[in-house]
Length: 142
Image 1 (cartoon, rainbow, N blue to C red):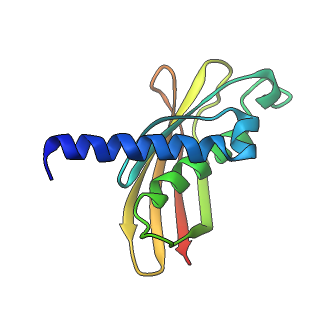
Image 2: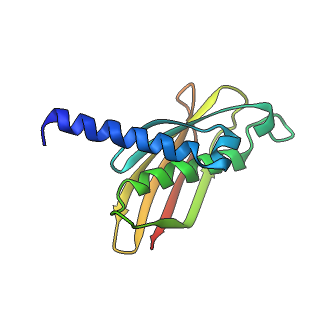
């Protein structure tokens, strides 16, 4: 495939991913945004808002976990074959730093794919590029 063809395929992937993301009510509720997507990788962003804060004024861990689950799902989806689906089998999050303002960016990448399972690593950063959380997610193919 030519470089131009590869660019067209990636542009199509980004367009389709943004369309799918906009069609997920929970994602719209949290106002997640797709920053980038490639085969085996996805980057999503979430802005801190009052509705997403816990009582101490910090970004709620559930919002961060949801961002991770969504980013890793999109990364895993890029390696599925036509008609194949996958669901979250396991999600382990390690929170490393709190966030009060700005936005968080989740970078997810597939690290292993087998016949039944897809394993995705994710790191979440604040807008100062400090790591906020790290996670590993396993998806079951079906």
